[in-house]
Every structure is written in structure tokens, then in C-alpha cells.
Image (tube, rainbow, N blue to C red; front, side, top):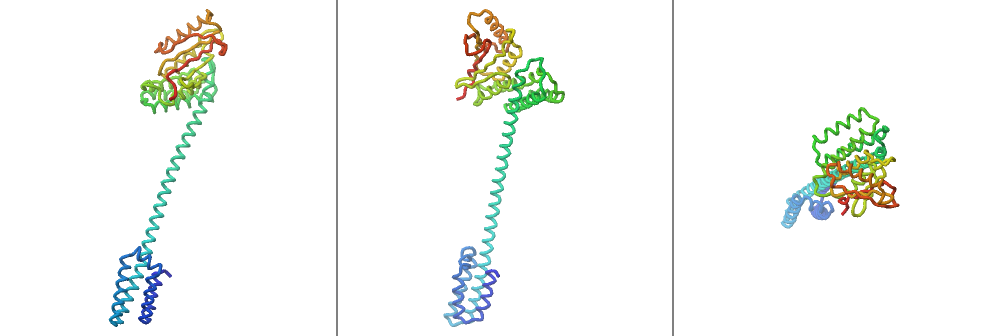
Length: 338
């Protein structure tokens, strides 16, 4: 039985008791925890119960027992109503608290799910990028006449798609992106086994990124990391120094001493992808007075001179035993981390 019902029973019992017993019962009712809650949560009804109780005392003082009993009954009824109202208010408040708690947890869950989805996207992107880097390195070692595996082709296509997404984020237009995307679709559908077609697509996607970067007054933070990564993909050893990025390759000259067209083409593509600042190249030779190596380096300089910005690259010879003869290392001075 609820507390309001108990109070109503008390009303009926008290109506049959004597006035002295009724007074004591009323005093006990106002001193209960339920009455205290009624005073807090239903003050209007509680005030009416108190007022009726005061009137009952006044009537008792005038020896008007009938009026006193009526006021006591009224007081108990108002108090019972106040207790019921207090319970309702408490239930409503608790319900509102629970609803607010549910909404808070729902929002937290949504945030957690969104964060988890973002982490999953980052993991997927990094995994795809790592696969592309690992597999595309195989392409860098291929010559124009060498076939490539299906796995290498898939890796190159993945890398190109990542490059196009980056170019779009950097501001490339649909007009710039559409031709490359169409080439991706054609190669993915026809799946040629010649490395040259896939290599050209990879290089052109890097060049598009370079066109977007060319609008920057200087390399942005993280550009040196991107340079190292891209150089590795295109077949160059790369090290990030404190003040620059160093690119190195032993493939600029073939076994017959001729300049490798494929390597020069990849290097020029790298220059276009990272268009800021001068690049200083050194060719390791057995001795500075070697006429053979002087002619070979002159041929390399002539090839570099065919690029759109020939003055950007300076080339010199260095006699060293730490690098194999014909090894070329180039310093990208503008790509330094703050």
C-alpha cells in the first residue's frame, strides 16, 4: 500500500478517535519523513495542511470539537495529497534525470563510434599506403622493357589513387583529376604487364601534386616526410637530415656508363612533385681528373638541362670512397623540418 493510501487510512481511523488522540496523531503525521518530503516538493499543498491544522487548534481552543475534527480531517487530507504530489514530483525528476543520463550516454556513444570510425579509416589508409609503398618499390627497379606482376600493378594503382585523393585535398580541379582517373580505370580494366604505362601514371599523379604545392610560398610542415616517402616509392634512397632531405641512387648510370633515361625521368618527376628550392647534386667519381667520368657527368647535366627549370639543379663531381662510382646524391635544401 502506498504512503498516500496509508495516510487516508489514518484519516479514517483518526476521525473515530478522541480529539486528544487525534491531535497526537496529527503531530506525528507532520513529523514523518513523508511529511518532510511533502514540505520540500509540494509546498503549496503542505501549507494548506498546516493551515487547516492551525484552524483545528483554534477551534479546539474555542471548545468547538466538531469544527476541530473537521479541520483535522481536512489537514490530513491535504497532507496526504501533498505526499502524493511529492512522490509524483520526485518520480518526474528521476525520470528526467534518467532521460538526461541516457541522452548523455547516447551522445558519448555516438562520439566514441565516430572516433572509432575515424581511427579505422586512418588505419585502413595507412595500411593501404604501406602496401603501396612496399610494392611500388619493386616498380622503381624495373626497366622500360620489363614486365611487372599483378601485385605490383595493384600496388601502383593504389598509390595513384592515394595521390589523386591528396591532390584533390590540395585543391586540384575535376578538370585536372578526370584524365588521370580515367587512365586509372583503363589500366585497372586492361591490366597491362608493361611497367612503363603504370610508371608514367604514377609519375603524372606525383606531378599533379607538385602543381598544387607550387602555389605554396614554401614547403608546409610534413613536406620533408612526404618527399622521403615519394622518393622511396620511385626507387631512390632517401634520408631526412636536420636541414634538408638527401636523395641517393646508383641507377643514374647503366653498366655501360650511359645515363639511364628511366632514372632521370623519375628524378625529374620527383623534382616536379616537390617544386621548392634549389637542389644540389653530387656524382661520386673515383678521381676528379677522370675524363671518362667528366664526360658521363656532362651527359647527366645535359639531361637535367632539358627539364622546365634547368637552373634549379646544380651538379658537381666529388671524389669519395664511401660511395660507389656513379652514385648520385642530391640535397633538397628547402625541405627541412622546423
